[in-house]
Image 1 (tube, rainbow, N blue to C red):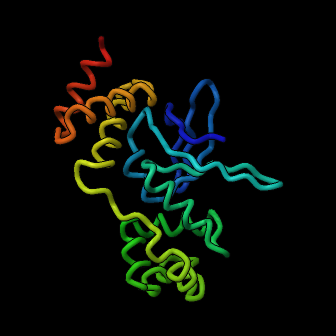
Image 2: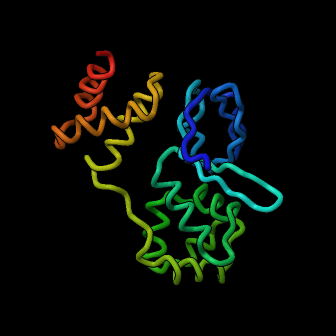
Length: 189
């Protein structure tokens, strides 16, 4: 299964991107909320969910692992398919979804096009307390930001993750700028 794509952004349309890596162009469906992260960039890195059916293989891409994990939680709910989950993530951030579901705000979910009352209520019942809220500052978001910056500079995702993890292990309270400086020093050795 494809879990992560790092490559050149060949084409970007509403709800879809083509990422070229290793000489192959992958068509990836993305939420509309991902466009600000992708627009104007030559290189992109996306966390991928590979959706396999009898008649189709589809890739769904997200700028962060948290968004991909939220997508996976959504499609695990009976009656919610990939298109509906993508619509939810296009209308609400993962944090807003977690707040709406934990607060039993089914009307907020039903406001997303394609989501009816019954589906919104089912989402609340099945996912209440299961969606992870945003990571606190200095946690996973700092790690993701640093890795994303290094990948956008042309470093391999695996190497970037290893170096960032090592720096965070020795200095967990570090700020993003200093983290990037130290990571770049390690990568250029």
